[in-house]
Image (cartoon, rainbow, N blue to C red; front, side):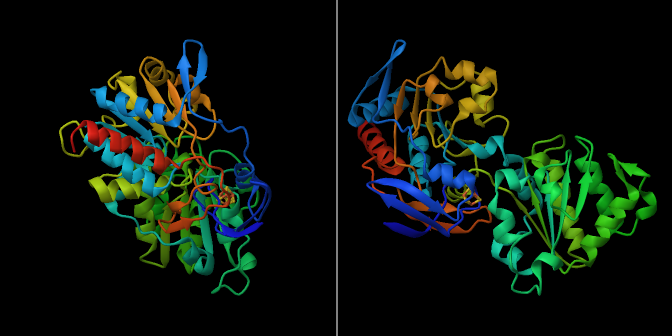
Length: 429
Ligand code: SF4
């Protein structure tokens, strides 16, 4: 059986033109996906059923027992943390928010360790963004700043920018210029028309210099700014001002370096300056599959995009205080439910030391680094492969993802809904 127009569940591009060939309940071939997406579709080594830690061993338990364990753990905790959510669908994220509210816990998603600062900047100065389709069809200048799509979002270039056709561009490959700004010469820099190499931590200064040049204050710019010559800065500013439609895509190289959300604020303000001369937009290169959706669902349910603390009985948000890394580092939470993410692979050692001391339940199809910290792991269907649902693309477009095979694994949403029902019953709701 061949499933057409499947949606890739790996990165924020959510490529929706994938063809998947299924034979005897297994994916045997994938067409159109990049290497990352193909590997995800072909993924093996799933856990067969829920497991419970028993000393140094694991023992098999039933799904009912695992769900009961997780519900009891959350109900008896004083300050439970519900973390992850970027690898699952909006429908599951929605149940997660209800659960956090019921137990007065903290719900946080992976954006607190990736594009959280970008969201803080957007809260301050807004987001002059647009869809990927608009960029594909109109942009004659694309800037990748602190992002390396060849490695992290491989088809971003072929579907929307460098190698894509453009409806309003006669010859997109010739007419569309690509600028890469980074601290090192990445794979993407190799295919750029202009590479601006800046010294680590120099993004804010370079953005400020470009803003000054765009405002006509070139004489205020020193001979070099963070390792970039004035001549190159003037050339880049002129390329931006003379473009018909420009788009900036920034990654963690901008949002997670010195300056953090102030970098993004400065970049957005540069884009606003440029929009006095031409049309310019800016967007984040969202990494995890549905991390954008976790921000959307949290925002429309609680008013806040991540790091939401229900301990006061109302939604409270204070990044740096109510975010997962901070709560774990302060040894504050006394139980953790991990869904659709692998914090043990990314969090600082101090956080993991606390994670090792508290009960942890993880919902994930595969054993991963966090498995070593779990008391119980419940294998679930892979969202976008054997479970369907809604995910948001990196430009904020919600896409209904398809199920390409049936495996019998429950979806995140099924497991969480059963957990939530038990918790409601225990609370007499
Ligand atoms: Fe999947 Fe991202 Fe590759 Fe597209 S670019 S196929 S969404 S991993």
